[in-house]
Image 1 (cartoon, one colour):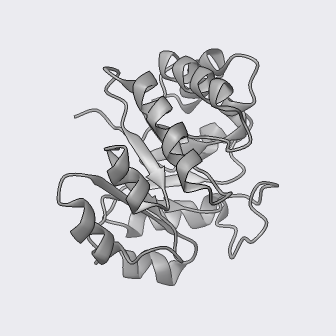
Image 2 (cartoon, rainbow, N blue to C red; image 1 turned 90 degrees about the vertical axis):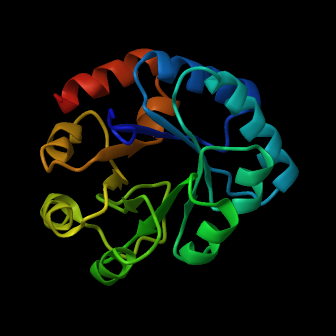
Image 3 (spheres, rainbow, N blue to C red; image 1 turned 90 degrees about the horizontal axis):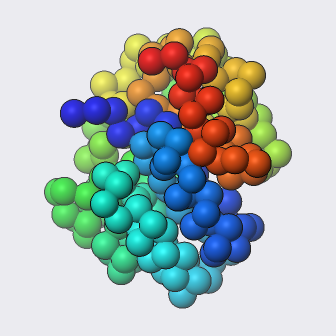
Length: 206
């Protein structure tokens, strides 16, 4: 099976629904392998509406749709999976609710969380933040290249790197053999999300 985590698009909740659908449609043409809808404003109805719209865009593409934080939204739109943060519902409970087949991801922000997550019923771990970023102000730890390299060796679960990654440093991140790289601004705010995705994949060199 090809690596679904390879180029992982996380959406920008400040974009309108039409911008969001445009970015996703173009990014999958450019080779994005997974899409996560992230909404931080807490309006569940809007979250469902935006997720359902993106689900239609992804129809037939084979690219999985992941919902950030909200198991209820993931179930409501029949998404392919859900991604939890450390303060969200416990992973073991989420797994019971979503069943064995949906993809379950969990963010880890330090070595202790990384170790503890190895025993949880999750499919992959989002490791953050690799570098500090303006979108994430409450960073616990900046892993850096050395920390990421070490984490990749230690984790039996696939890792997806996120945080401050762009065309300048993506090659270095890919060289750690991390399973996937997640991006927000580098794709969402690109003039051509399709071209940006193609170029980022090219820079990853694998």
